[in-house]
Each structure stands twice: as structure tokens, then as C-alpha cells.
Image 1 (cartoon, rainbow, N blue to C red):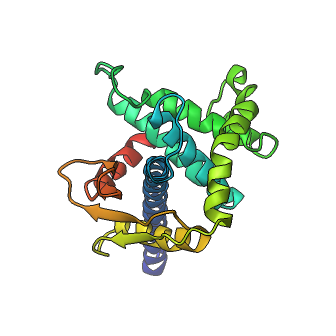
Image 2 (tube, rainbow, N blue to C red):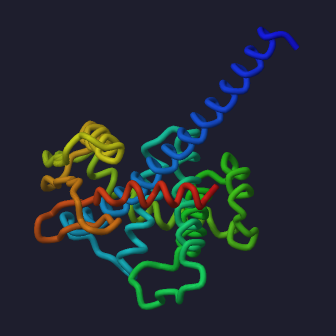
Length: 246
């Protein structure tokens, strides 16, 4: 083999490696973004329950999970919505895998990770069963649960749907305000999302979205300050989950 051929083969191999690396990085970023949005919408659910004084029949954490799924379904076009729902569900599955061998925290206000996985998949599938049949199959949704998912979505939408309609069609003037240094992938995602939500809806009272160092990988809603806080530590944790989910 001549020198030119060897060089061409080496360049081709290098390009193949670089392309694979870029694809992996893109897939990881997609996973991280999906889970940031899913958690942000979850905390938004808590915020809306607070500022709109919404009744909650059952666990508030379950209601916030439901709000997150419905917002993904409502805000994004189909291809993007399916990608976000898939990666957000896989985030729960990865957390379940990481916690394997540890005692399940049955005392927690949050449901078990795998239960949250199936609930997310079911609700998202139930929003459009004909269009999302392949999604349900790919995510391993059992047929016995799939049968009830359209009714589960309808019930959820009857609860949260009027709330979202009121925010979109009402006369509220409150806004989301972003507070965080624009120097991270996580902050960039949330800053763009805040701008998008402000174009879509108003709030009965303004809510601050804060990115800060917390000492833990977490996101939560502060009742007293009416802030949605997403911790800087959350992004590296999600990147770890992304590697687990592959």
C-alpha cells in the first residue's frame, strides 16, 4: 500500500472516530437537556400548585410529575417531544440502576424510580396512542398497563389542562425571571426555556428561576421565596446518568 493510501485510510479512520465521538456527545447533551427540562417542569408544577392555590388529591410529587409530562406533550413538536420523553424516562431508569443494591426509600414523598419511569411512559403514550405505539414498545410498556394509559392521560389532562389554559389564555401579567450566571450548559437551557415560557403564558405572580451551587445534585421549589432552584451540581450528575443509560 502506498503512502498516500495509508494517509487516506488513517484520515478516514480519524474522521470515523471523531464522528462517533461527536454523536456520543450530542446524545449525552440531548439526555442532559431532556432531564433538565423534565425536572424544571416538575418544579414548575410545584410552583403552580403554590401560587395558584391548586387543590391536590394525593401526593403532590405525583401531581408535579404529571404536570411535567403534560408540559412536554404540550410544548414540543412530536419528534422533539418523543426524544425528551424517552430521555427523561431513561433518567429514572438510570437512577434505578444506580441505586440497585440499596434499600428503596419507601418513606420518600417521591415514587420509586421505576414506577416514575412507567408512569411517564404511560402518560406520554396515552396522549396519542396511535402516533406513539412504537414509543411504548421501545420503552417496554406492558400491554396490561398500556390499555389504561389513554384514560390516565385524559384524567390528568382534565386536571392540569384547564390550569395551563388559564395561564395561556388568561390576563395574568406575572413572568418568569432567570437568575444565574450564563456560563454552563444547564444555565443556557433554562435561560432559553424561561424566555420561551414568557412568550407562551403569564403567571398570577412572578416566579424566579435560579441556578446556583447547592452542595448537592438537586432541583426544588422554595415556597417562601417563590423560586424554582436548579443546582449547578445537577448537570454533572445527569452526565453520569447518561453514561449509565447507554
